Length: 149
Image 1 (tube, rainbow, N blue to C red):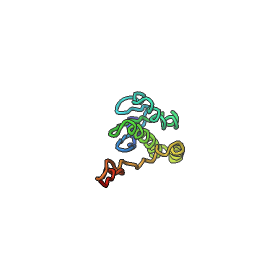
Image 2 (cartoon, one colour):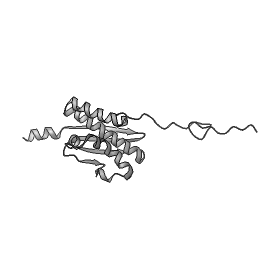
Image 3 (cartoon, rainbow, N blue to C red):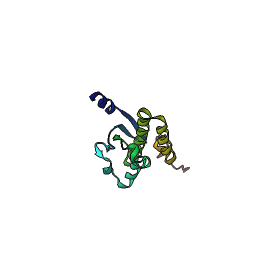
Image 4 (cartoon, rainbow, N blue to C red):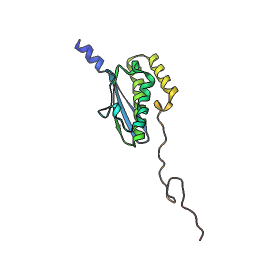
């Protein structure tokens, strides 16, 4: 009995989400549907307006799909908007990876299709980065004004 319980508890996957310089790592394991961000409950995420963005993958899938897993998030770097986009990507990718590894391929495909149909950024990372500044101007592209006299 103890061995069987140890096996089910060991069912965990680690996934990351990225946006600009923000990185969120999601640890998805068998559990009771708890979601924590840096040790705090999900409903404490600030700012309030962007909190809905973190809830999106969970609301799309419904409680019956993510109710049996616990999600722990660690977030670092970037600004608060980038962190929130990284978190939502980590949650979505984590649930998909968990279903692929421990449930079945058909359910994983169904979940992935739901998420992709809503927003591709939930699964695929955004490759855009800040362009470095060059000499001869005040930013990456703009140049100093030219004067002949």
